Image (tube, rainbow, N blue to C red; front, side, top):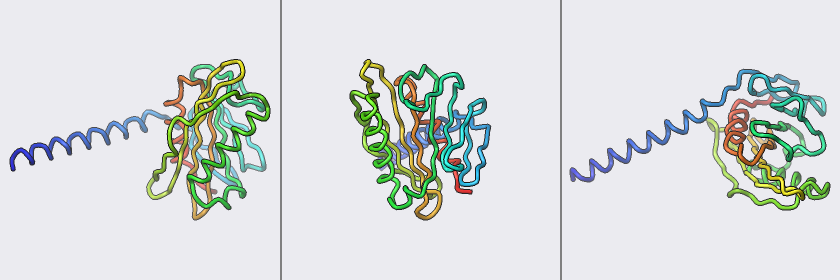
Length: 196
């Protein structure tokens, strides 16, 4: 019996150590600015720029103001250079589940990139991840992409339910080596997001 207790205590220590590691990762993302629009609000990193579209329903965040492309967000991003679209739109309210919204957003971006000859191949980095922030459901999906010029990039999609059947949908793009940082930033932004 003593052996079982020792193993159980060791298990609890490992679980709490893992949880504190996850919490410290989330705390590494500093979101010191707050965007407040007519439709949505969220925190974002200091010194980032933003443009507002569609009467405040869509916001483009970017970390490098000299390198913003409105036609091809995915490629030609240097290390540490991120671009993220945050959108709240009525079209997404008819797809009443975060995972379905992530799939819809992923498919729409990939179809756009292929149609514009920006993309030669892509594959999801795993399954759609589903979780919640204090009871607000969200889903996310990462995608590795390659351009016709063999440039590689990473895309991350997040959908969070901010109110019953109302969603904020995010699409972010970065250099392939910045995939973890992009995910951390976007999940922190998603956790802070709300409907105005």
